[in-house]
Length: 160
Image 1 (spheres, rainbow, N blue to C red):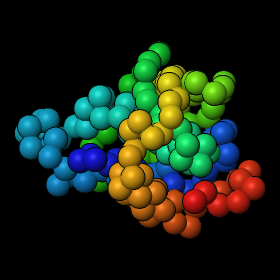
Image 2: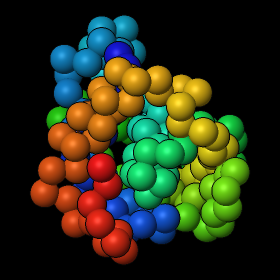
Image 3: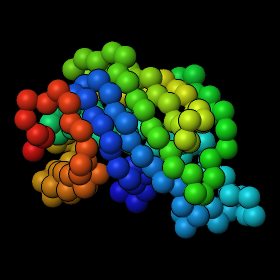
């Protein structure tokens, strides 16, 4: 995975909610050209940040048996510019969930300022199709790092 946007998960509630952090840095590739002299994080990357937070929420909740895939973005609203130096707080709440899909309500804040809202819909498929052997190990290592010191709520046991 070349672009990993979630730096830390602060709180994850089993199949219900996630709060994650993304630190926006001037050293990110996108700011070389978007826009020179006035760096702005593209809306598509804000959506990707939401998708990655949702993927972590859903895959960890499924104890890595499912792969979450972004399939739809509804009602995305961009309310403020995101620039290097900003720390994004990503909040996502599951609105509906079944064996094959999940629908979430998502927000991004910088401090107390609302930056973006969207409804994100994921398809859930068997993880083995996307994460064979060594890739599953890599995903678990990345998630373990991101989830360090995270408040895991509603889990009978820690995800393996």
